[in-house]
Length: 196
Image (cartoon, rainbow, N blue to C red):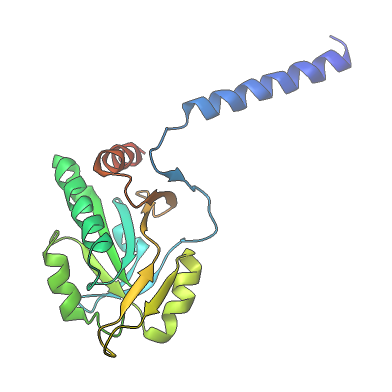
């Protein structure tokens, strides 16, 4: 085989291998962000006062949602859907860890968040940061949040990004699920990640 033919054959083989690898990759419902340089982790405190990082949940698929407990619609809907995902996983339900990170540390005290989580699933955890650390945390996850003034100083609301980050059993960021994607898609994606 001449040198040019050998090079062309080698490149063709590599191309086929690359196509084959792509075809073997799992098809996800959520947006595949594997290898992203953001949303790579956290070091926060949970509603029980325990320090938490992603490493605490090795062996589980972790779904992280940013919100606030006085949210009227998006937050409770997202957490209810996540609880339903856990229920639909059946025997594998304990392999899913729901995480709610507060963007309202002024009002979301540990006790308030503990009571809020009890509305959805007792295994879910609410995490919080110090108010002065929240901007950097939000930036590291590329999430948006903004206080919207109300009629009184404590009746404000919060505008914020509405989506969930999904991590595999090794704590690697894998997916972003937009708000409204639905339970079935997330169930399918969690099952896919649990297969490894």
